[in-house]
Image (cartoon, rainbow, N blue to C red; front, side, top):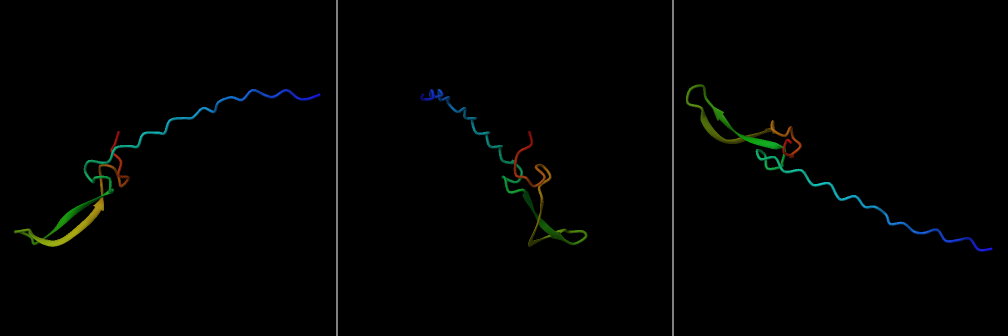
Length: 65
C-alpha cells in the first residue's frame, strides 16, 4: 500500500526591510570634523582638524526617525 503524497505549499517570503536614510549632518560616516583654532583673542585657524562623534545620529550614520 503506497502512501499518499502530501500537497506542497508555497513558502511565504517577507519583503526586505528598507534601509534607513543617512544622517544629513555627517553623511553617514558617524563622525564630524572640526577645525582647530588657536589663540585667546584672535582665534587663528590652523591646518589641523579634530574628529568627534556625530551628535545627531550618535555615531550610527542613520538619520533619526
